[in-house]
Image (tube, rainbow, N blue to C red; front, side, top):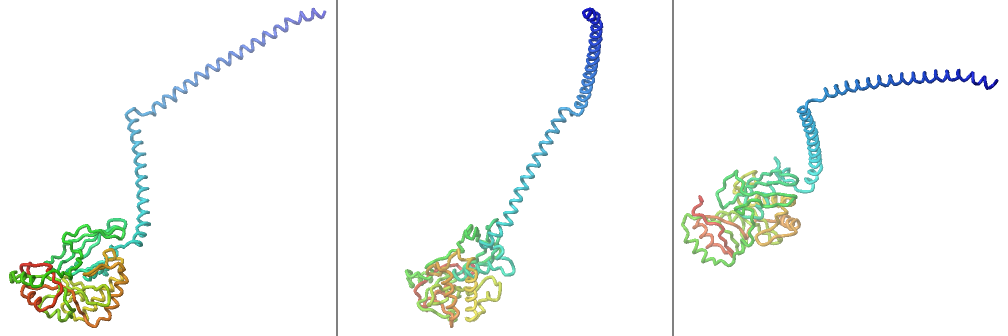
Length: 365
């Protein structure tokens, strides 16, 4: 019985299996049909997206042009950024380093500004004190960079006709040190031994001078045997050009020009001054040099016989001694005059040194 029941039930079970199998097939078919539809939709969308993308891409020429413009724009930005960095660095250097250099080293541009023009007046007093015949008539300063300056100078030579307005000397001042860039006439040169020409025979020299034309004009440096007062030298019949102030108690003896071609103040009118007024000018020049040693120190301190290393101490001694001078005297001086005036003066003066600095055919040369 149980076996029969199992055999009768088997068909029913088999029918159920068929139905399940058919249902699974139906589901699979439906799934497959949906997958096909989905794939078709995705491909269509991709085609449309691709078409849109292709439409957005410009033609090849336009693309290359846009790429080139983009590169140029980036390069321009890079260049501008680099320039800005350099400008910022330069500005920082100028704002920070330049004031520092001006504080450490001499700044002639500022010192030469109106109305004081300290640079000019120190140069003028320095060469008058140390060098016969030389007058600083003008001084202009040009800035060239960090602690670099060009100084254009007109150094007038009292032995020659003077034409104003044309600088004949150029110096460079770099980090506080002077360099001569142009001085064709050696206007700023100092001559040692000017008043120590003891090997020239006076009689021979006089005979040579007598052989010159009567119109001749001579410039001479005289070393006298004894000092003479400035008052008497002015009355000697020749023109007194420059004197070295006689100060036997000190080492350095400065000089004073007896006439100036350019007058910047009352102290330049020497022909009209008394001895006491000339003494005040001499003291003023020495004081100006003492107060502004940093301007002229690089040139050195010297007179007709030697140079001095301890410049400030030596100059202070000379200045202090000059205050106590009761009268102005000179043992070494420069004169000028025509042939006959010079001959008369030399024949009446005891000298130990005579040097002819220049001979002109006439006073108009």
